[in-house]
Amino acid sequence: MAKHDPSASRDNFRSKWGFKLACIGSAVGMGNIWLFPSRMSQYGATFLIPYFLFVALIASTGVIGEMAFGRAAAGGPMIAFAAAAERRTDRRNWGEALGLVPVLGSLAMAIGYSVVVGWLLKYAVGAFTGSVLSRDGVDAFSALFTETASSWGNTAWQVVAMVLTLLIMAFGIASGIEKANKVMMPLFFLLFLGLAVYIATLPGASEGYRYLFVLDPAGLLDPYVWVYALGQAFFSLSIAGNGTLIYGSYLPKTEDVPRAARTVAVFDTMAALLAAVVIIPAMATAGQTLDQSGPGLLFIFLPNLFDTMPGGTVIMAVFFVAALSAGLTSLINLFEAPTATLQERLGLSRLQAVAVIGAVGLAVGLSIQGIVSDWMDVCSIYACPVGALLAAVFFFWIYGEEDCLAQVNLARQKPLGGWFYPLAKYGFCGVTVFVLILGALLGGIG
Image 1 (cartoon, rainbow, N blue to C red):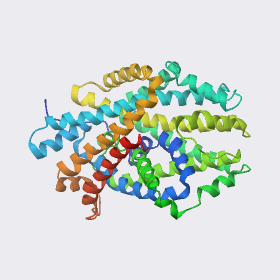
Image 2 (spheres, rainbow, N blue to C red; image 1 turned 90 degrees about the vertical axis):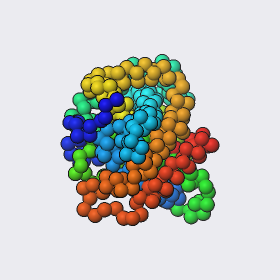
Image 3 (cartoon, helix red, strand yellow; image 1 turned 135 degrees about the vertical axis):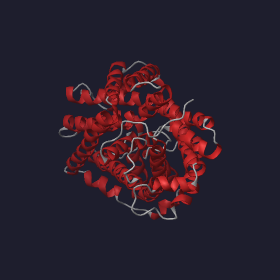
Image 4 (tube, rainbow, N blue to C red; image 1 turned 180 degrees about the vertical axis):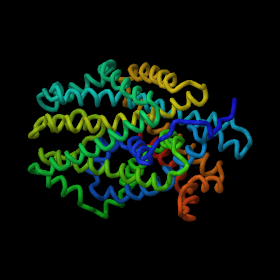
């Protein structure tokens, strides 16, 4: 198979903030909205201490590594792994074979995520038409979601969501993905900020804030606080050997990768905190505590809550438009790695690659509607950590310290300190192994 030429002309991000917003869009997703608030509700502000520590660790090692690795290879996981393998052993084939693992993991995760984005689209449109809010109590909302999440229960909306995703991707990196993220990511933050301000004006919201900012140092002795903080940080930062790596491959040599990684981590954390500041006080206005997470929180309990609030129709519409923005940007990123792989390895045009991936994604996605929860569990527990570990090993162990540091420090006025390489090589890789083991033992940690 012919060697990949990194100097070949490729579609790239046209601006630094375009790249950063795309990476933020890949990181900000359902984990920020339907999982982080429930962790905060369960452990209070105590959860933030280990969470911030793990975000700092992963962003300053793993995120930097995947961005720099992709840019160095000017290609996706198969190209990047093959380049590293060739440097160490003069043979590319084994690197290409292992590079297929995160690509398939990304495709599998994207297929499951497309089902969720279909739900989000249905509820976002239903908030405007009133079809979703015309329910009577939590049991009615539960029945609606049960019907939606059943086999072939949301086919039309899922097809529309996929078509919208594929249309954005078909326009390419600069004209499609970058432009879409420049709209959807600012929209997400503005809408959630508006929700936070509105919720603050409602009676009873103060109880939620009081709980949010109570710090109990004794809570740090609970090992599950650390385990779930690790899982939340790891999965929220979109480390899986594919999404961040492929976006990095479209990055110009003039971009300061560590600075970009820091920006992504800051905004991803802001998104999670914004979701908590909206959802937990909102529950408090109804005299309720947040004891649900996942789809049940997003599609049953929150719509039921919005239905009882002043201006509930508007609030629900704003909330689901924001959530849909986060879902679409994440879905685009997940589909990008397999799409780029078809272009790189089979020589397909952008439109042909998008069409093939779209056809596979839609066919499988529609077929797994009724089992998507189990499907996503397998992807998050095994595929994501394995992909992240492979990318880390190839870049920090196989690529070599000198070449690794050269790529990481490219375009930096001041190179990273001597702490970076050992922390990445041993600390981040070790943490990734822990995520894989703990996820398998506990049935998922993020």
